[in-house]
Length: 305
Image 1 (cartoon, rainbow, N blue to C red):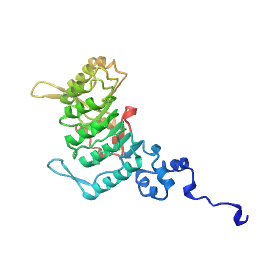
Image 2 (cartoon, rainbow, N blue to C red; image 1 turned 90 degrees about the vertical axis):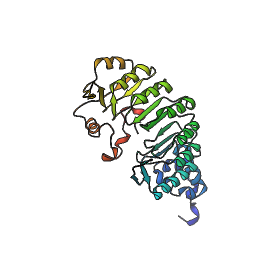
Image 3 (cartoon, rainbow, N blue to C red; image 1 turned 135 degrees about the vertical axis):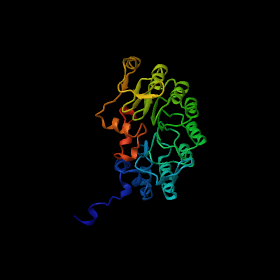
C-alpha cells in the first residue's frame, strides 16, 4: 500500500459516543486527572451527562484524627485540599447533571465544601452523607433548600433532628426514603412523625433500637411501606434496678403492627455475623474495623450502594 492510500484518524476525530463509553470505564480520579484538556472533543465527552448522573466519592477518605471538642475531628489540610480540588473539577465537568452524590463514612465534608457542592447540584435526588461532624446547622439547611428534588438521604444519627426534617418537609416535596446510620431514639422517631409523615422507606439497620421507638414508627408513620431493622439490638425499658433488657425476638404484637407494610425486614440471629458485630459494638457499628465497603450494604435494594 502506498502512502497516499489511507488517511490518519486523530483521537479528536473519534465519535463522541465512543469516547463517552470509554470514559465510563474510568474512576473519578482518572476522569478528573486532566483528560478534559486533551482536546475539545475530549472535553465535550468529559462533560456528557451520562458520566455524571452519580458522583461517587465513596473511595475517598479524610486523613483525620479525633479530638475531644467539637467537631470532634481534625482533618489534615492536604486532605481537605484534595477533596476541594476533586469537587471543583467534578462539578465543573458535570454541568449540574449530578442526581446521586455519595460520600465515604470517613470523609468529613466542611460547610464550605457542602455549600459549594449544593449550589452546583440543583437536580440532586439522592444524598449519601454518613459523616456530619464538620457541617453546621446553617450549612445543612442552606444545602437542603437548594435540593428541591431530593428523594433519598443516608445520614448519621444526630442529636437535634427537627431542624433538618423540617427543612426537608418544607423544601423536598418528593422525599420518601431515609437511612439512619446510628441509633434512632424516641425524639428522632417523633420528629419523623411530625415532619415526614409520608415517608415510605426507612432503614435503621445495625443499630440500637428501643421497642417503644419501633412501636412509634409502626403506629404513626401511616404511609410507611418498607422498614429495615436487620441486625439491630432491640431493647426494652423495664423497672429498676435493671432499667433495660435485650429483646431476643420480635413478639406477635409487633409483627401484627408491621403486617400492613410491604416489607418488614428483620434479622436477630445469634449465628449472623452482622448481628454479632452490632452487639459487639453496642449498637453503634465501627465500620472502619470491618471489610472496606461493608457500610454500603443494605437489605433495601434502593438504599444499597
